[in-house]
Image (tube, rainbow, N blue to C red):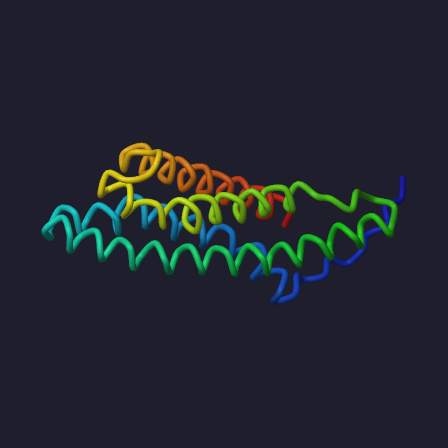
Length: 157
């Protein structure tokens, strides 16, 4: 059998960035969860630690949201190209994972975080502990989605 050997084209710089970005962001999330968030609470008074952690989370939320939206545009174009070539669907697994990260960021940070001060003051339908637990669950699930996305994108490369 004669096999046709096609030259392997090196991936473009953009393709390399796309393959690396989910792993880097998953690493950022793990660092936030395991290092950056516990450290202030171990070294500062509770109110100051909360202020430091709030600064970390606002940057993580906006950074993750922007990265997810950029990668979502990439995944959408890639899925559309695959659908037009007859080799895939217009809705890819990467798109599902990225939409999940966007949803969990919006829910966990932009919807729940603003409710925390009122809950801390004893106002609102949920306690501070309930909101904090649900917010933490959103963060954990989002981290898991980024890890799965990193695995899928790296495996494809």
